[in-house]
Image (cartoon, rainbow, N blue to C red):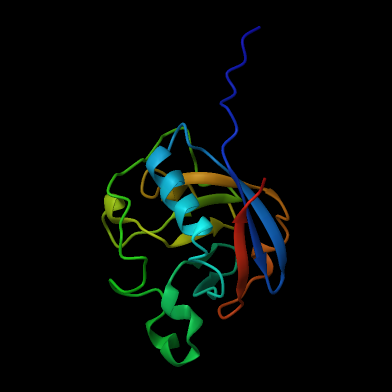
Length: 162
Protein backbone atom coordinates (compact mmCIF):
# COMPACT_ATOMS: atom_id res chain seq x y z
CA UNK A 1 0.00 0.00 0.00
CA UNK A 2 1.36 3.39 -0.98
CA UNK A 3 1.15 6.09 1.64
CA UNK A 4 -0.23 9.44 0.53
CA UNK A 5 1.21 11.14 3.61
CA UNK A 6 3.44 14.07 2.81
CA UNK A 7 6.85 14.43 4.37
CA UNK A 8 6.71 16.27 7.67
CA UNK A 9 7.67 19.92 7.58
CA UNK A 10 9.39 21.94 10.27
CA UNK A 11 7.65 21.96 13.65
CA UNK A 12 7.43 25.38 15.29
CA UNK A 13 7.26 25.76 19.08
CA UNK A 14 5.47 28.78 20.53
CA UNK A 15 6.22 29.59 24.17
CA UNK A 16 3.69 32.02 25.66
CA UNK A 17 2.93 33.41 29.09
CA UNK A 18 0.00 30.93 29.24
CA UNK A 19 1.89 27.81 28.13
CA UNK A 20 3.56 26.22 25.13
CA UNK A 21 2.13 24.77 21.95
CA UNK A 22 3.60 23.32 18.76
CA UNK A 23 2.46 23.22 15.18
CA UNK A 24 3.56 21.21 12.18
CA UNK A 25 3.96 23.01 8.86
CA UNK A 26 2.95 22.06 5.32
CA UNK A 27 5.83 22.96 3.00
CA UNK A 28 4.45 20.77 0.19
CA UNK A 29 1.24 22.84 0.10
CA UNK A 30 2.55 26.28 1.08
CA UNK A 31 6.31 26.29 0.40
CA UNK A 32 6.79 30.07 0.24
CA UNK A 33 4.63 30.68 3.32
CA UNK A 34 6.43 28.03 5.38
CA UNK A 35 9.87 29.29 4.27
CA UNK A 36 8.89 32.89 5.11
CA UNK A 37 7.54 32.06 8.57
CA UNK A 38 10.46 29.74 9.39
CA UNK A 39 12.86 32.53 8.38
CA UNK A 40 11.07 35.01 10.68
CA UNK A 41 11.11 32.47 13.52
CA UNK A 42 14.85 31.76 13.14
CA UNK A 43 15.51 35.52 13.11
CA UNK A 44 13.56 35.75 16.41
CA UNK A 45 11.07 38.18 14.84
CA UNK A 46 8.20 36.96 17.05
CA UNK A 47 10.05 36.85 20.37
CA UNK A 48 8.57 39.35 22.81
CA UNK A 49 5.52 40.18 20.72
CA UNK A 50 2.03 40.09 22.17
CA UNK A 51 -1.23 38.56 21.07
CA UNK A 52 -3.00 41.45 19.36
CA UNK A 53 -6.27 39.71 18.52
CA UNK A 54 -8.09 37.12 20.63
CA UNK A 55 -11.69 36.27 19.87
CA UNK A 56 -12.99 33.40 22.04
CA UNK A 57 -14.28 30.50 19.97
CA UNK A 58 -12.84 32.05 16.79
CA UNK A 59 -9.09 32.76 16.72
CA UNK A 60 -5.94 34.14 18.33
CA UNK A 61 -3.50 36.20 16.26
CA UNK A 62 -0.03 37.69 16.57
CA UNK A 63 2.81 38.92 14.35
CA UNK A 64 2.83 42.72 14.68
CA UNK A 65 6.26 43.89 15.88
CA UNK A 66 4.66 47.02 17.38
CA UNK A 67 2.86 44.81 19.91
CA UNK A 68 6.06 44.79 21.99
CA UNK A 69 5.19 48.38 22.94
CA UNK A 70 2.17 48.84 25.21
CA UNK A 71 2.07 52.53 24.26
CA UNK A 72 1.17 51.50 20.67
CA UNK A 73 -1.67 49.14 21.64
CA UNK A 74 -4.28 51.12 19.69
CA UNK A 75 -2.36 50.32 16.48
CA UNK A 76 -1.61 46.64 17.09
CA UNK A 77 -2.46 44.50 14.08
CA UNK A 78 -3.44 47.43 11.84
CA UNK A 79 -1.90 49.01 8.78
CA UNK A 80 1.28 48.41 6.79
CA UNK A 81 3.57 48.68 9.83
CA UNK A 82 1.85 45.67 11.44
CA UNK A 83 4.20 43.24 9.71
CA UNK A 84 7.80 42.40 8.91
CA UNK A 85 7.58 44.62 5.82
CA UNK A 86 8.37 41.75 3.44
CA UNK A 87 5.16 40.11 2.14
CA UNK A 88 5.23 36.48 1.07
CA UNK A 89 4.31 37.55 -2.47
CA UNK A 90 2.29 34.46 -3.37
CA UNK A 91 -1.16 33.17 -2.61
CA UNK A 92 -0.94 29.51 -1.59
CA UNK A 93 -4.62 28.78 -0.97
CA UNK A 94 -5.30 25.03 -1.11
CA UNK A 95 -8.69 23.36 -1.07
CA UNK A 96 -7.28 20.43 0.91
CA UNK A 97 -6.16 22.67 3.79
CA UNK A 98 -9.20 23.71 5.78
CA UNK A 99 -9.72 26.06 8.70
CA UNK A 100 -10.48 23.37 11.23
CA UNK A 101 -9.89 23.78 14.97
CA UNK A 102 -6.13 24.18 15.44
CA UNK A 103 -5.35 25.27 11.87
CA UNK A 104 -2.49 27.78 11.60
CA UNK A 105 -2.76 30.39 8.85
CA UNK A 106 -1.41 33.77 7.74
CA UNK A 107 -3.58 36.86 7.91
CA UNK A 108 -3.72 39.57 5.26
CA UNK A 109 -5.57 42.80 4.63
CA UNK A 110 -7.58 41.70 1.61
CA UNK A 111 -4.92 40.33 -0.76
CA UNK A 112 -3.64 36.80 0.08
CA UNK A 113 -0.30 37.38 -1.74
CA UNK A 114 0.40 40.31 0.60
CA UNK A 115 0.23 38.17 3.74
CA UNK A 116 3.38 38.61 5.80
CA UNK A 117 4.11 37.97 9.47
CA UNK A 118 0.69 37.83 11.12
CA UNK A 119 -0.24 34.29 12.14
CA UNK A 120 -3.56 33.08 13.50
CA UNK A 121 -4.83 29.84 15.02
CA UNK A 122 -8.48 28.91 14.62
CA UNK A 123 -10.17 27.89 17.86
CA UNK A 124 -13.11 26.18 16.12
CA UNK A 125 -13.96 24.87 12.67
CA UNK A 126 -14.32 27.95 10.47
CA UNK A 127 -15.40 26.93 6.96
CA UNK A 128 -16.16 30.60 6.23
CA UNK A 129 -12.37 31.18 6.12
CA UNK A 130 -11.61 28.34 3.68
CA UNK A 131 -9.93 29.48 0.44
CA UNK A 132 -9.49 32.99 1.86
CA UNK A 133 -6.35 32.57 4.00
CA UNK A 134 -3.38 30.25 3.52
CA UNK A 135 -3.37 27.41 6.03
CA UNK A 136 0.28 26.45 6.44
CA UNK A 137 0.17 24.31 9.58
CA UNK A 138 -1.80 22.66 12.35
CA UNK A 139 -1.33 22.39 16.12
CA UNK A 140 0.13 19.04 17.16
CA UNK A 141 0.79 19.63 20.88
CA UNK A 142 -0.55 21.98 23.54
CA UNK A 143 -3.88 22.58 21.83
CA UNK A 144 -5.32 23.72 25.18
CA UNK A 145 -3.06 26.82 25.15
CA UNK A 146 -4.40 28.97 22.27
CA UNK A 147 -7.97 29.13 23.65
CA UNK A 148 -6.57 30.54 26.91
CA UNK A 149 -4.61 33.33 25.20
CA UNK A 150 -5.90 36.88 25.53
CA UNK A 151 -5.00 40.19 23.91
CA UNK A 152 -1.76 41.39 25.49
CA UNK A 153 -0.40 37.95 26.44
CA UNK A 154 3.23 37.59 25.40
CA UNK A 155 4.97 35.30 22.96
CA UNK A 156 8.10 34.61 25.02
CA UNK A 157 9.81 32.94 22.08
CA UNK A 158 9.22 30.87 18.98
CA UNK A 159 11.68 28.39 17.56
CA UNK A 160 11.96 25.54 15.10
CA UNK A 161 12.03 22.22 16.93
CA UNK A 162 15.12 20.13 16.20
